[in-house]
Structures are given as structure tokens and as C-alpha cells.
Image (cartoon, rainbow, N blue to C red; front, side, top):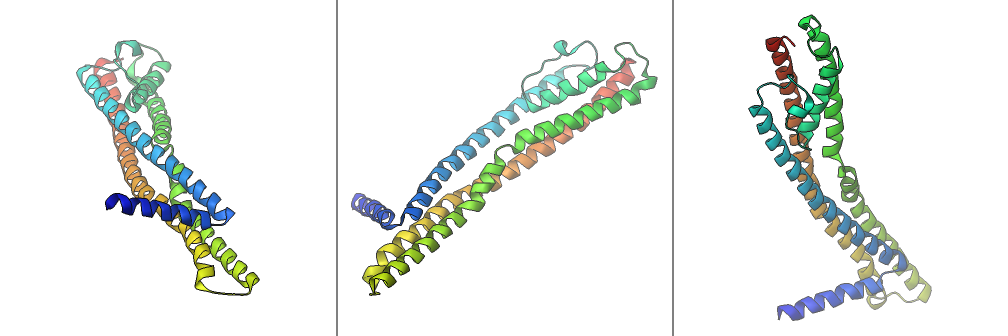
Length: 233
């Protein structure tokens, strides 16, 4: 019984698609492609954020085990490919670039200014990483319902135009064209509804990770300054 209902529903949807005008059919195809892109982006972005978060946690543990960050060189500090590691590399590169090892700490404030500037740039770059692909997903969320509405209005306009040209207005004449045009609205909503939930979830997740990144940058700057003062480097 369920299989028969599914086949009837599928046949009905296909019939509605065939009853649509050329513009409606093109819009449905575009919306199907947009749905594929949206699901690919959502799943890929979720995996990307999960991987970055795990790498950040591993990097944070490695840095906790390291007694000092400014003694030695970058090669002596365990770094992975996480956003946190990129912040550490940028901050230490800026610290080492100014003055070199063994400099007295009377210029520490100037050196820390270079470190903080480097951290700000690194945070901005990693923020772009966290927010990447969200514009495309947001565009699909916003544009899909309007594309569906466009197809519906266009299809209804064609349906009424064909009826007026034939000289006879009846439900039998209008129904196929109207049902076909309404399919584009359904397709637009089917694309937009799951996409908007995924977009809001990923946006909240990205903002949370960006806040954690900014907090880590602040802690990192404090640790470098404390190490410099304690070691007189």
C-alpha cells in the first residue's frame, strides 16, 4: 500500500513537472541543483568545523605541556595545521622578527605591539576561514523561495493566457497549468526550509568558534608577555 502511494505521488510530481511551462521546468531544475549544492555545503562545513575544533583542542593540550613559547625557535614547538597553530606561528614569528634573541625587555612593549598586530591579522584570516561558504548557503536560503514564486507567477500567467486565447475558461483547462506552476513554489520551499535550519546552526557554530579563537589569541599574547618577563628574553 505504501509503495503504491509512493509511486502515485512520484507519478503525480512528474506529471506536474511536465505540465509546467519551459520557464517553470528550468526553475525546478535550478532548484534541484541548488538543493544539491546546499546539502553539500552544509555537510562539508559541518565536517570542516568539527575537524578544526578537534585540531584546536589537540594544539591547546600540546601548548599546555610546553613550558615556554619564546625560548628556542618555532621548530621546537609542536604545531599542527589548526587555526590555533596558525595564531601561535604568527605571534611567535612577529616576536622573533623584532630585535632577535637576547634583547633586553625594555623594548618588550614594542615587541608585544608587533605580536598583538600579528594576532589581529591572524584572527581576521581565520575568521574568513570559519565564515567561508556561508555566503553561498545564505544566498540559497534567500533566493530559493523567490525562484519558486517566480516560476509560480509565470506559470499561472501562462495558464490564464492560454485559456483566454482558446476562448473557453474551465477548471479542466486551468488545472494542469496551475498545478504545474505551483510545483516551483513547492520546490523552492523544499530547498529553503532545510537550508535555513542548517544555515542558522552553522552560523551559530561559526560564531562560537570565532569567539574561542579571539579568546585564545588574548591568552596567547598574555602568555608570551609573561614568558618574556620571566625569562628576560
